[in-house]
Amino acid sequence: MHDVIGGHLKVFTVETTVNGASFPSSMGFLTKHEWEWNLADRIGFLGVRHGNRALPPTLRRRVLNSIKAPYGVTGVNAGAPSAVHPLTLANVHRQQVTRIEGQADIGVFGVPYVGPYNVNSIMNPVLAMCMSLGYLFNFYLNQPIVRRGGVGIFIHPLPNVFHPVHHPSYIDFFEQVLSETTDPERMEASYEKKFAEDPWYIHLYRTSHAFHGVHPFYMWYWGAHALQHLGDVIFVGADPKSAARMGFRAAPNLSDALEMASHTVGGSPSITCLHTPPITMADVR
Image (cartoon, rainbow, N blue to C red):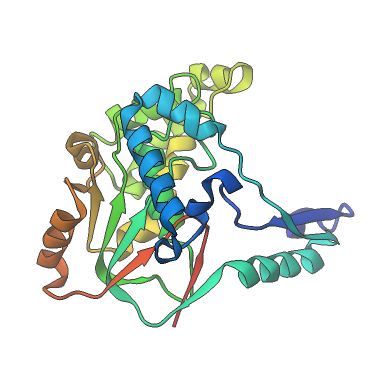
């Protein structure tokens, strides 16, 4: 954007970076590696896990969305975008890059309950796909953590639940578009313009709290690279109908998912697990 308008306007930008402190100190066990847990951490984890499972979905989302991350500022840089942004990226990489030796046959990704587009809302199946294949898969430098033709295993329930106020067009995208095609090029050619220009979606975008009518298309496109790269995509604990609607497979547990993946990558596969949070940028050599 700066390159487009740079010759016409003077641009002054301020960019900040924050650390990866995703949970408050009362939930400190979630900020440690599991092998670093003491007895109190293990008791805290069991309490949170069982309590979370006992809550109904609406209350569970309310509790999870009430957790405030104690992020701390790690850098503030200001000036011309061309001078500022490299400093910002360097600071992000300094705190997030994790070196990994070699690609794996299988990548296992735990999918967070919240992303950029469902704050105080619901992570519907399309947003879960975007978080999984668009964000987590793409958190890498040089090359993906999974080899070409390998398998991505994502842990998310994919409930067929949508927030009608925030994501109205997602409902129609899921029911109408994905029932016809999961191919980004085909859906762009056949459906994108209709959703982008729909007067009701535009009205909700302008006067209510809805994302734009075309938003689910861009979330789907975000995962296009992973769809091209991976030989199979499996969601653990997922609603089988939701997974099938999006062209994925569902497994009841991780053991079954690994068994299913063996038909694609063979026996005794190499496996890399991306632990999130915190956000990590994999530097795959």
